[in-house]
Amino acid sequence: MPDVKTEVFYGGVNIKQDAEKLKNKETCPHIVVGTPGRLNALVRDKLIRLNNVKHFVVDECDQVMEQVGKYTSMP
Image 1 (spheres, one colour):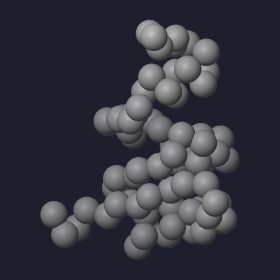
Image 2 (cartoon, helix red, strand yellow; image 1 turned 45 degrees about the vertical axis):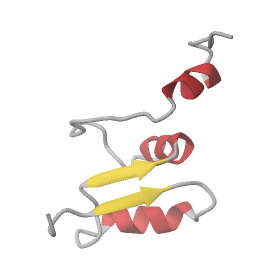
Image 3 (cartoon, one colour; image 1 turned 120 degrees about the vertical axis):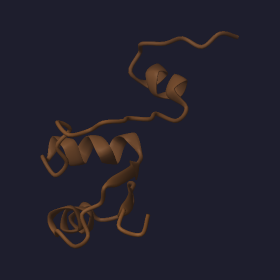
């Protein structure tokens, strides 16, 4: 699938670089992988719109849910 573009977004990188990749038609990815914090910032700043998202995968979901207080892991 040579025409499918992917990009990784994570903290520690200037968010302006991420914004440039998303705004440019040549570099705008079809598949996005990122940390929860960076993806939240990109959505909050309206750099990524979620209305066209078809699939959403959360790795280590139990840890994410613990951080938002919605889950308590079993001992």
